[in-house]
Amino acid sequence: MPRRRERGPVFWRYAIGGMLTAVFALFAFIAFNVAPATDIETACRIDRKDPAHTVLLIDQSDPFNPNDFGWVSEFVNAEARMLPKYGRLTVLTPNSASPYSPRTVFVGCSPGSAEDANPILQNPQMVEATWRAQFFDPLKDSIEEALLETEQSSSPLSEAIYAVADRADFQRVVDNRRFVIVSDLMQHSDGFSFYRTGADVEAYANSDLGNEIPALEGVDVVARIVPRKEYDLPMDSVKTFWAGYFQGAGAQYASVN
Image 1: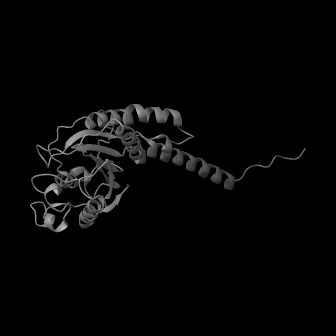
Image 2: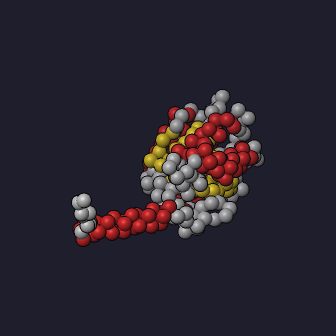
Image 3: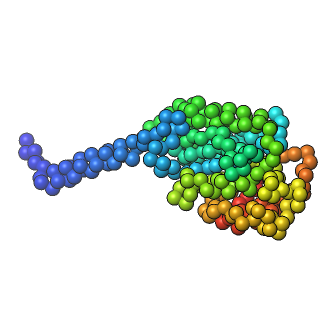
């Protein structure tokens, strides 16, 4: 009967090395997947290391009709799903009474959508259910309530934009900043009004607001123009005004319609 060959020191060195590598890999996996501490109300990281921040400004100075709720919901759904896990979403509305203090409608962070779920470690259906119950449904309810608020006597868009750019949680240290405006884009306030001068770039530059250039370098800005049967000004001139405005602020600007 042949003698059994004994395993030499080289084998054991490789075996021990493999076991140590597996142990370190396990600890690294656990360390990278430990959930950070989050705020109970918003589900946002307590350390404020937001991986992204989207600010949604909804201008409801002119009434939304019930038919608008559907497309607004779909639009917000798409924006919310773009956020990574723990990405922050802030929803504001302009404030006629205090133009530089837009009203906060919603603040929350995504628990992670089904699109980002790890199919090996997570059940996508459960992730989707959690995302809706804890994040999207409260967001949708808050926005629908805001759309019913029609007591605004003016539309201080420029002032609200300046306030957003000045937010402590929307500075350059925050990655993936996105600013989304749902509005007919009709600036109307004591500082400057399209209804008095039209979307006149030179008139705006000479107004009280002309020197207030928001710092939006590195921010993606998107305008979703609210559909109306008739606009008070030619929409082409309005789009041109805001394109120049955001270019001067250093943002990447696009209108989605």
